[in-house]
Length: 186
Image 1 (cartoon, rainbow, N blue to C red):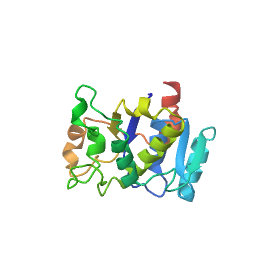
Image 2: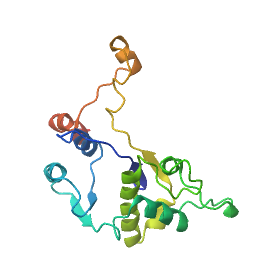
Image 3: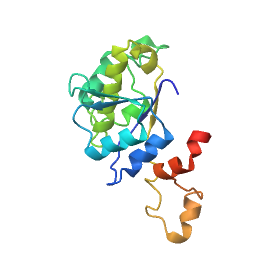
């Protein structure tokens, strides 16, 4: 969907199960990454799952921004200006605001578990600015938090109640989805 951003960060296992599942659910057309940063395992997964996807490495700092620079740029550029009340100033969208430190009322300090997600957003903002479409896309303020589908299943739930607490959902990982061709034929 054009203009929709899914923001999140997560730890993955040695088989890169979560990144495989993410790529199966949301097949990207282009991948931007910090040059020299993806692990060997991640690079193998991206090359094997997405061989025809454009993958571009960006320079840390100047192109792939840190979380603080991202928040500063989002506020200074006025992407989220309230159009009805011009005097109200910039208000960050709720998902981005939830990723800032609670002690910072200005929203310039990243939260402790959001630095990677905000840094990745900074990379996207840089790229959109380079393509001269940053104002159009970011001003839509269509941000959602990405939480891996397997994150909360089974945590603190008694075995006898697991199906009632999870609404009888089944999580299929990326390898299974690919083998079954569920998303490709849908």
